[in-house]
Image (tube, rainbow, N blue to C red):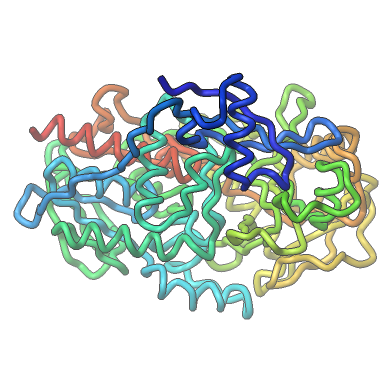
Amino acid sequence: MPQEIEIVLLPEEKDDELLLKQKAAQVLKIALNRIQSVQIRKRSIDARSRQVVFRVKVLVAIDEQLAPEIFTVNYPAVTDKKPVLIVGAGPAGIFAALRCIELGFKPIVLERGKDVKQRRRDLAAINKQGLINPESNYCYGEGGAGTYSDGKLYTRSNKRGDVNHVLQTLVAYGASPDILVDARPHIGTNKLPQIITALREQILNAGGEVHFGAKVTDFVLESNSLKGVVLADGNELNAEALILATGHSARDIYELLHQKQIAIEAKAFALGVRIEHPQVLVDQAQYHCVVRSPHLPPSYYSLVEQLDNRGVFSFCMCPGGIIAPCATDYNEIVVNGWSPSKRNNPFANSGTVVQINLEDVPGSETDPLRLLNFQLAIEQQAYRLGGGNLVAPAQRMVDFVEGKVSNDLPLNSYLPGTASVDLTEVLPEFIHQRLRKALPLFGQKMKGYYTNEAILVGVESRTSSPVRIPRDRETLQHPQITGLYPCGEGAGYAGGIVSAAIDGMNCAEAIAKKLS
């Protein structure tokens, strides 16, 4: 009978398979030759004491071999099957398409941006020249915002669906098997494009369709029932069901829904800055060392404070990462972060934001776009103060807290460039006041965090959608429009690659239940 146990390993021991068996024998108090195999189930770093260790949960096969776990999915031919329209080729849209195929429906994926290969040129223009393409950028295009902004897979969404199915699918199409066991799985921006391409080819091979440059400009409605969509080129596509998975930045879709009097709601989100430190400072603080062991990955952190009844917290932390310009239109500044698979850049960055509630934003309570417009106004102010060409307003950390404009700025990873600015001119008062209080407190929790070697870059504003598209909890359809399935981050029902993918699969299953 296999047994699951936890084993503690030093960093230099974690890849020693024989040692793993020996330690398992010691824990179970059995002879080494009785252990046939040891399968790692979960692996995490424990840096609470000065001796950093790996805690590894393993399944030990005693006196008999474990049957190998083989992950397979049947994707039947669906060329002539009933179509389902999917707007958006991010993780929600891609996994919705794959699940539609499994269930015997033909997905037709409509993506306003370009494929992953073509997107690279537009991202190069953003980083090197400060030139934004409103239809192809870090947020729009195949794979969605996650493709070129990291590929972090950490999620707490087990209750929403099968997390392992998502991870195993990614491994089957090229991701490292490490994502199945690491406590904070991560693919890396340099590896995600090949995986996304392989998933698209699977959709096409099964008879599905994927169209790029296919921007939806109107919905075809008949008696509160969705019949199809109209594209920017004038073409009309029809189907009995549409999964709307456009991501958190498709403002024109929210405006279209509002214009057509399809119910949407203002939704709370968080806003702040992206903070970058030298990675060595984070390693020294978290690993209690002068120089990080080569057997340890670059360290991360997670910090949170409650100030004046409001959460201030770090999120989307990128060890060995880069700050990226993620605007989706002209005359706005939006920043995010990403890391390559090796996380080997010299900086570490993290979004550091304050929760915004509905009552914080002036305007009519019946205006579902008021938080979206609030978000946009701050991004445009950041652009004006940066001076153009996606140069971002920035300030050294201690200078920001003490109310000083920085005389100079530290070397940093944001390629379009940074301008020394008083960030209180960018951020609303209720946000910058809480940030000023939180940063020294974070420094008490993490040695070396509160330093003028750190830079604050504005603004981190696309943490989640400022709009929610309502849907019925059981059918997942919009309560007003039959056949419309709001999905993923853009609809307000996910918060990352894995949760969005799960939501896409759930919507596909809801459609199959209805149409079957």
